[in-house]
Each structure stands twice: as C-alpha cells, then as structure tokens.
Length: 131
Image (cartoon, rainbow, N blue to C red; front, side):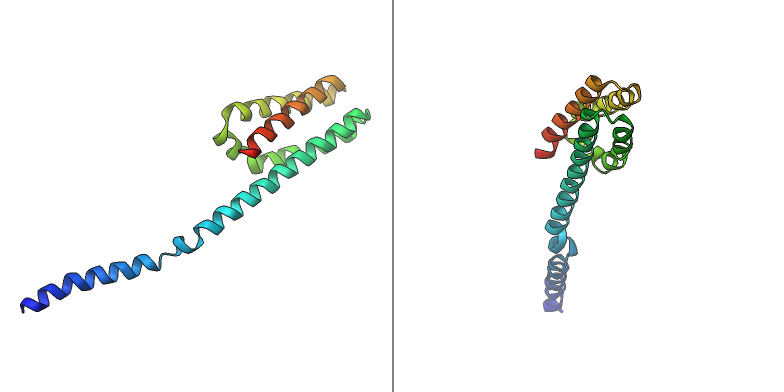
C-alpha cells in the first residue's frame, strides 16, 4: 500500500507535464503575432495610399475627386486606430484632428489647409507605424 501512495503524485505530475506540452498556444502564438503585424502594416499602407491619392487630387485642384478619395480614409483608419491609440494617444489625437481639418478644407476648397492636414496625418502615421 505504501508504494501505491507514491505512484499517485508521480502520475499526476506526469499528466500535468503532458498537458503543458500540448498547449496549442505555444505552437501558434508566434505566427498569430506575425499575422497581426502584417495585417496592421498592410492597413497602414492602405491609409498612406488614401492620403497620397488625396494629396495628388488637392494639388491638381480636383477637390471633388479629393473628397471621394478621402472618403476611403475612415475605412482604412478604422483598421489601425485602436493600435495607434495604444501606441501614442498624441499621434491618435493629431490624426483625428487632422482628418477633420482635411474634410472641412476639401469642402471649402482650401488647398493650403487640406495639404497641411494631410501632412500632419502622414507624419503621425509614419511615426506610429515604425514603432
């Protein structure tokens, strides 16, 4: 009977060890992080593309086309805004404020204000997407 008492704890430790070795998070954790980082970078690229396309239209004085292009901003921003806010609330607020500025400037056909806002968005996206 004494030997049986020692076998139970040894078996319990062995079972716990086996359960720990088959933890699915340990095998997929790194790839999930890589996929999230890639998806986020792709979303930043989408945002940069929208800002760049809007800038081209503004510089050409095509405010209606610039508004149509900048309408895509919200969708692209939605994909990264939580991550931006987590990394830098200052950059987040700057981008939010600049987006409002750009929308108003496009409606008013104010080239200088639109370009200023787009520049602010670009600068802050570059800062946050690198870190």
